[in-house]
Image 1 (cartoon, rainbow, N blue to C red):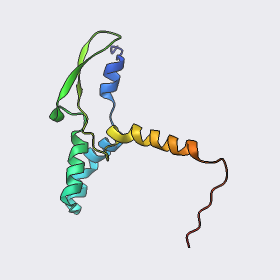
Image 2 (spheres, rainbow, N blue to C red):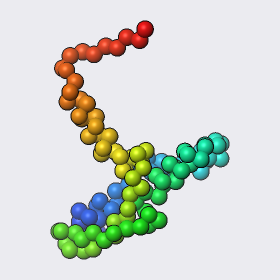
Image 3 (cartoon, one colour):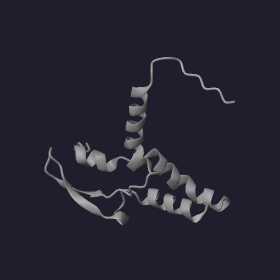
Image 4 (spheres, rainbow, N blue to C red):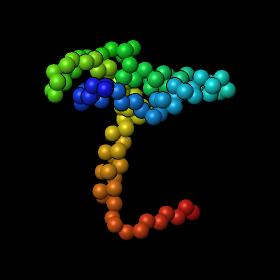
Length: 108
């Protein structure tokens, strides 16, 4: 029977769906397209986010006392792991100021 994961181990094991899709499909996409250097830079940052290539710090679990390496984030604004929560928080703030009425927008 596998050992129960503590909170720190669960956090370390989380993977972004976007990151998994990039790892799976990026090579074939790059073979068909030629993105500019700016887009390649963003893609590289997202792929290295929370990996050993960006370094790590030790995080001690309050539940079990084990120390585990927590890999550093890329902090790129396009990265779903780094800016996903910020985006959700921003959306909630915007929703909080909306009036509870139907909204229509006309483009003239």
